[in-house]
Image (cartoon, rainbow, N blue to C red; front, side, top):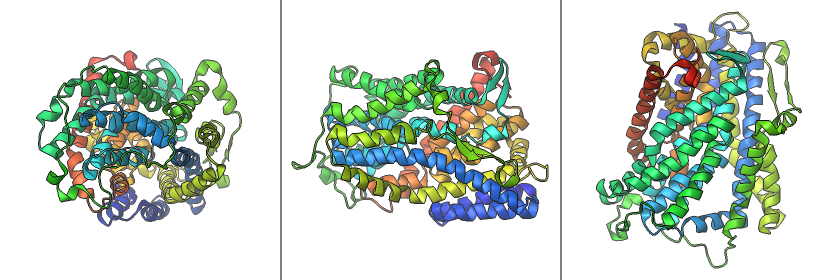
Length: 560
């Protein structure tokens, strides 16, 4: 009975978002209210505790929204300054082979924007750019969404990991015992990031090839044309996933996607220009006369070059803000420089909210949304010689864009914190632990296979890997403990699943299709990519199982 009640808030999300297609800004308040009511009537959670938990969730949401605001603000001012035109121009002068263009823009450039900004940015930039180059809008949207899978676990400067699993610090104590001794929570998150990047290295390296096959199959019904470029596609996969893994191993979860994509671009583009692994026979799209009507909507393919009156920033200046962003983040995160502790010296928060033992703290200067995102947004007009009134306009646009996300994220975190703290006052198992006990009872023996699908479900429902980790991170932690699975590997599978679920997330698909002038085609996009997402999660679960069986605990630091 209690397990049925505990799952009800999640069922509310599934019913109203998936079936009735409500936006998250309407669904999540209802889900939070249902969580509060269930906690009050079935867990005897006092109203004061419910309110305190909700406040703790809102504080956590503010911490994440600062990053979202800064990331989107940079993109908006870059559009106005001509920086995006400059980046696009530099990226599209590499090859006339459409498969190569897809690898550069949808995979590597998309990974870069995911690492720098996340939250739907790759689709908002990559899909329209492909359409401008002459790709059919529907195919451009579907391939861009598919390509943006492996980088998502480390998107927006690692928010899905360090933001999505932040609630575990209060839930799982501030230190964890491993086979190699006690580690701090920051090391705990870093370990999750390493395993996450390792799983993406094993499976995600094949995503560029899969994306190219989607392009050739949808446009010319040919798998063979996609497979012909397999050496270059796998090379494109490795030049991102391997650096992503190495950076996660040495620098933590903030920079793998950002620096990994930059590394990939710096290796891949010169290699392609020199003809490395590039097929001699160029591949092109079918003539427009052979296109299906469903491929285009209000926006027609073509017109990729900017208008004569449009401002174009040179490649060096166009890339300068994002390069500076990566440098600042890298320098401030290097442990031996000691900058991070100084940035964390100033904190804001609320201890023992409303007299409970619920506490939430944020570190504004360490939050990349403030430093360096806002700093870089302020200097872009100077770098690109753009009037500052454009910055003010971008600020207004950004506030307008994040308003629905702010509502949805705040209520999502409120719901999660209520569910997580529902047992504190009565000194009993919380709603999430009840769910974990039930899940472990029925699926504990195969939890490595199940875990990524839970993450995928969360992202499918919420439209965000971060929110999926917020919703199910504690559940996965508890289930791993109850089932005897390794905690860090289980959480890595959760965030891998969250990244994969981003491909079929309703919000992601709708947003991507909207940017290329298509509506009502969401079902096509989801049906096209869903089988690949299922295989991705399944292979990651199998890979995790094999790693556990083959390698002893002291190799990867498995811990329960």
